[in-house]
Amino acid sequence: MDPLQSPSIELPLIFFGGGKGKLKFDQERIELKFLTIYSEENDKITSINTFGRMQYDHYFTKKWYGLLSMKALNDKLKNLNLRLAVSSGVGHHLKDDDVKSLKLEVGVTYFSEVFSFSNDMIVFPSFSKIGELKLRNEASLDTRLTEVWSLNLSHILDYNNDAPKAQALLTP
Image (cartoon, rainbow, N blue to C red; front, side, top):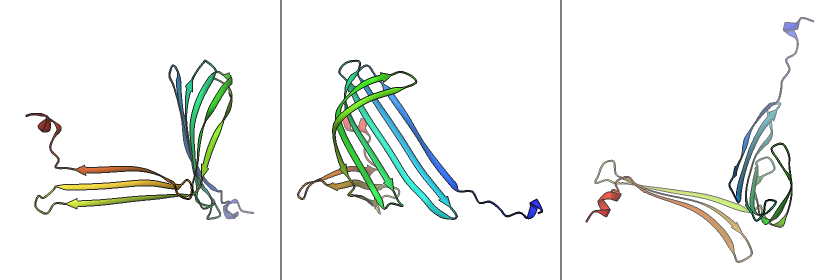
């Protein structure tokens, strides 16, 4: 068989990226992790998901600490918009050096998979002054906690490109 006429081999396309970081202080430690995966095989998407984790530890002694943790997962193929787990508890380092780390953590965790995300942006151009612009953007994440209570986290940005400068406001 001629090697130039042999059937082609189609390899799967896989993309993954991520990172992790750790900040250590005298009595605190913050860990961040992020991972995203996209893959397709035979022109069909086989995986598309994103995972993130953040943990804050406050040390009471050299080995004992209190912790706050948050994990989030998004998986488009499993129709999982956002899974969130928020934890709080205590931990103990059994082994912690530059090569290996083994810890025991105990606490309570809240899970939720029912979230809605919204983003509203309004732009107010000025018709009297050319180039003057006012903008308001509100992004929010909502989840139902109980039948009556819900939690809303929002970020609001109000912008005015023709606002008075701070120094002009401070001078009499």
